[in-house]
Figure 1 (cartoon, rainbow, N blue to C red):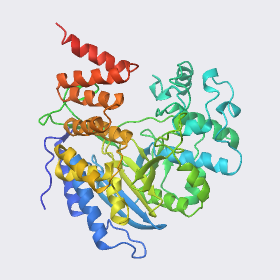
Figure 2: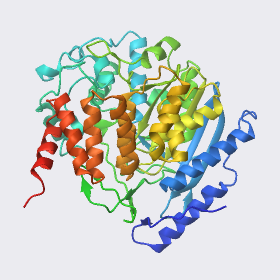
Figure 3: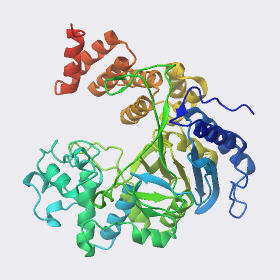
Figure 4: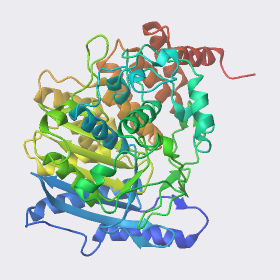
Length: 507
């Protein structure tokens, strides 16, 4: 079997690391002996082969050192596989008990923790946060618990505080002094401040310290013995280090310019999650542990069926329209079915398909691998009735046939699914994931589709203009920035870029 070349990408500082990484890719292709785990003979061999083949292809394409996957079907673990290398430095393979940082997947646990209090009658989702917490800025007080959990609060983001990784008190003082971004409930804005407030509300009701972790009860109920809170500074048994590929192209409009020749360098990722942020990020877990958590949720051991439905219902904005967020969980349409789950750090993804009885966990040790883009394909292998019309079907088609085929592929999907509506936010998120992983040409195609299907969206034209700029098409970027400003005069970022392009390069 041919092993994909590393194509000029190289770990920093050592030819020995390159040899380890090459061995990891060989291990991916051959599959680590004993990597499969079956329960009660529940999965067909051909399903396992399909998973292996698909994940091998993705790991080789994205140069992912190590990956673990688990699949739950009808309340049972039916697949657990592990591939490649957990520690590139020491050549340690991924195994069943390898623990990965799951970052914002922690928010799904926080949503469950809050919902357990709602179920007990101790927390009101519609109540303003100042019912539970004192000494908040006046503009914050009317924000509801539901708006915090669904990122519709409009609050400033503590993650932007200069000391967010070093001094919690100073970071919190900084965010308290910032202006609110928009009226609560007006729109979506992903914001870590929301979850620090939820952490303090839940702990206030439970009589714990404000920054105490929230998921301990869930870990005990589900039997998650390998799961721990911590960060890159914590000592956690069997924890895989996290890596990223640093690309060498110049930065344009916030992203790396397109290039086929500049090599990348593998570097270690160091993250700090102080205790006041551990309702947002901070859990580390194994694929098997997360599968056990999904099973416990489905079995009603953690929440009732009615509470899960509340958790997984998209929260409405002030105008009555609904976004893609429930309470700590993202909710996406999959044909007439749905996917509910959470992603973390660009390297961890957990999804349940409640209408199909399937759950999938994919964990990697590479920032920018975005396993959420792989998870629907794995789910479809175990849920043959899952209709992947829309973005998932298009993504699978383009990964196989090339992104230059996007318009033809999208039209073919539309013909097979009359009335299909492409979710603008999902297209936009996909395009930016491609931009952030050094695939600007592919991202450009996705943004072209979004602007074509949403010609009156200022955001779609703004995103397309940014991708054109990154790809070196200043003329095209000027056209679409102008369109973005015409459609949304409040878009100051687009107006600034337009002015700079019209002024030309500095003399």
